[in-house]
Amino acid sequence: LQDQWQVNPTELVLGQELGSGQFGLVLEGTWRERKVAVKMMREECMSEDDFKEEAKVMMRLSHCKLVQLYGVCTQRSPLCLVFEFMDNGCLTDYLRARRGRLSPDQLLRMCLDVSEGMMYLESSNFIHRDLAARNCLVSKNNEVKVSDFGMTRFVFDDQYTSSQCSKFPVKWSAPEVIRYSKFSSKSDVWSFGVLMWEVYTEGRQPYEHQSNSEVVESLNKGLRLQKPRLAPRSMHILMEWCWKEKPDDRPSFGILLHEIGSLSDM
Ligand code: ADP
Image (tube, rainbow, N blue to C red; front, side, top):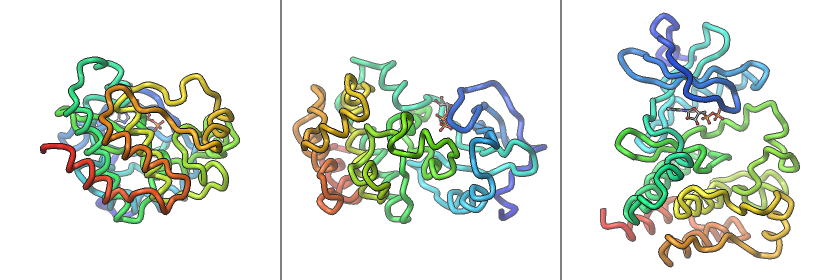
């Protein structure tokens, strides 16, 4: 790793626990006068050497709608990732806590924020692979940012990485991902359609009463999630466009950003 991305352990002050994720504990912390979130990576959960290489790529990705990775602390075990702190936590919880109180403008703005972050990833030829409201975070001033991009590639737990397995995010995955693990920016677009649905249902679980295999079966029949009550017609048309069977028939994030932007007055 380049030195500028090495976080010196003596500069990192760890605080209270924020939660725990797939890779281990997430702690609040302070680094160079800045509030940060520190992910402690449990070694047995990830391939560390592969990750150190990839961290260099991830740290070069920098955009106001992505949760910034500030650096990696490799001198200490476990490996720690130091991220921009997001005061309002994950988007799913944020939506659920504010049910009935979010304006049409705010809901649209959330979709716009995510499409901006995703357009940046798309233009950087970087595939997210696990886009969902649970992997977006909300800042102090209620901006939504995309997080956890590319991270599933380093998970050892095959319960999560094989589409046949229980933890695989089938309900967010494009058909070609479920069938042959074919990830692309267009499979991210499918997931983005589900994320828009999550926003407009104020954080409901997609296909709530269906098992993963039932979802696969309905998708194969051409069935899709229904229009959320709060979603304008125009937003539902965009969702359905994201859920086209063939990846080439789906819009790019560039197009989505343009379309969503034209629906907002900002
Ligand atoms: P993982 O991706 O490893 O499963 P998460 O990203 O879900 O872990 O993190 C677990 C919890 O930690 C989240 O639900 C959130 O509350 C908190 N968290 C994660 N990253 C941040 C951050 N950058 N700022 C504030 N809280 C965070």
